[in-house]
Length: 101
Image (cartoon, rainbow, N blue to C red; front, top):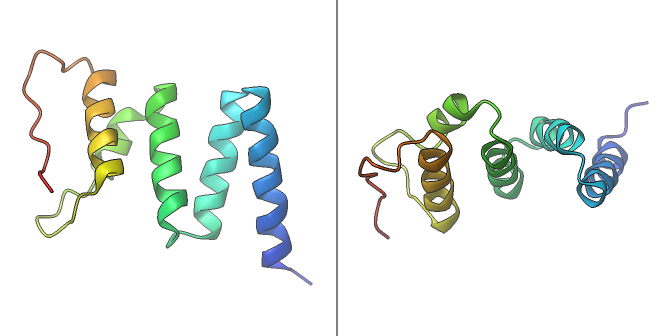
């Protein structure tokens, strides 16, 4: 029998161990799997996005995920990720329109 609660707990432990060992590939993999298990979890969404931006992996795809709809409410984590995406994309010389609170 598949037990999602146990799977989530085990995956969180794997993620924690990957973070402690500073294994970026394992961290990215575990954060993606955590998000797949709980796509509605805002922390998993932000963590997965942030970790990919910090590691410089799939930056263009992650930028698209940053609430391109007009009715999206940006929070501080979203603004941080937007700024980081601009930095990682080497767009520092260009103004970045960050939504104000």
